Image (cartoon, rainbow over all chains, first blue to last red; front, side):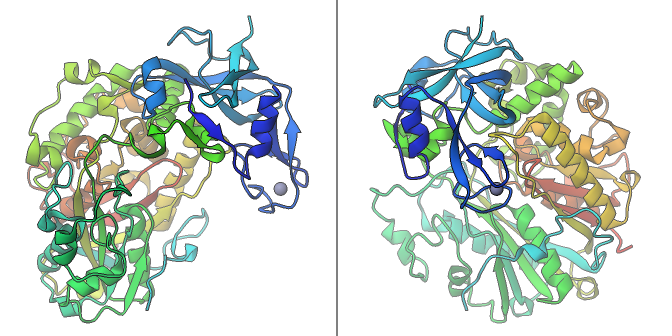
Length: 135
Length: 440
Ligand SMILES: [Zn+2]
């Protein structure tokens, strides 16, 4: 079970979109550039004036993965070992998100495969974007 | 006068800066260490402050100078290995009372300020330049070299110290909580341990070049062997155990493909070096080791964790910066002491250097050849983190000692020790020093 999430000022729009089963990523409209994780300023123009949240298509590819056997987070330790994959979004492969790849066997991960976003409940009910392999 | 962090202008971050303006004009002379310990036993005499003083005094004595000759201090104020003094734990009053205090009761226990050192080392009467460097000794060395070269001080002590407290690595704090703040949740909810990013780069490396985890074995065994000949190091002092191929290959996974021995082992220790001008170094007790260049990597990955492509590009750039500023080529390197904690990025560093002509994807094959200190191609003669625990400074101590001819059992014998390079930690965001037995 993933830890619960307490949205803060910077990330509240991301988490409320997730609760509506939408994936949004921070975008600088000046640079036309997505960035994740979100930050107070655009990583390129260094200004925070043109940051907005943009809805994503919710599709991506498995870039890479590892199998976690010794996890520092107490709530996840019962689930060990588990996959942690890096997903690259189709909207912009420079944007990466982590995934436990629900439904994919441990250490049997089809690198390069297409995935789509799903939303999974965490310990306090906050929904978290996750990714499933498209069959 | 409050000590601040060194300005970005002191680092050599760009390609195309030409030969370092102080090439060969700054030298390392003295080396000082504290003992090592896995965790602090909470006695005053083993505190991070006490061990810092010990390392500094050892460096002064090693260089054969008097304390009043020292006019500069470059230190890393952060001393944590990842452990922080718990908020609900009473302060160790007997330790605090054993030293002259600053306003911060954890100064000298879980952090370190220049002010604390000066209050507790009254013999340092002539410090008129002090500056902080973040995180690592590698960083502080770059700053100290530049400071001496620029004439900000002529005799500088550089210090890095580590404290480690009871409890398992990174298992407390927010990792033990039911809920966490939204910003850290973005990256930490999935439970990837610290080695995960490097493990992924290694996984991609193996897929791309047709290599596997077991090919790391000779490098691991060689590094532990070198470490056991490092009397200042943790394994030599506390657990003088060689590592076998079976030990390594059958070790439990942390984040596959990184296993226990691919990770670093946090320890308590402190080290100091005395840097001075090449001119003054001539009159000191040890053979001067001249600094030909220092280089900095300030790349930031686009995504959550650097891709193999980003890592390879940055290591190649770092290699070019190292050679350009030092006015040398790869053929001039007698040895390499790039960092290894995590083990699985050492090959990125040495491929970036093109060490002994290796190209991308060839380092693990190179590990299958003679990489020992007796051979023509010594790899990590310090033994690094694998050989002596995680200080991120063994490679610097070793480089200095190799070039002074006093590396003891680790002294490289297959080639003459003339020029070496050390640095790290990570491929993106490291600091590097080029050392030489002669100023030109
Ligand atoms: Zn922008």
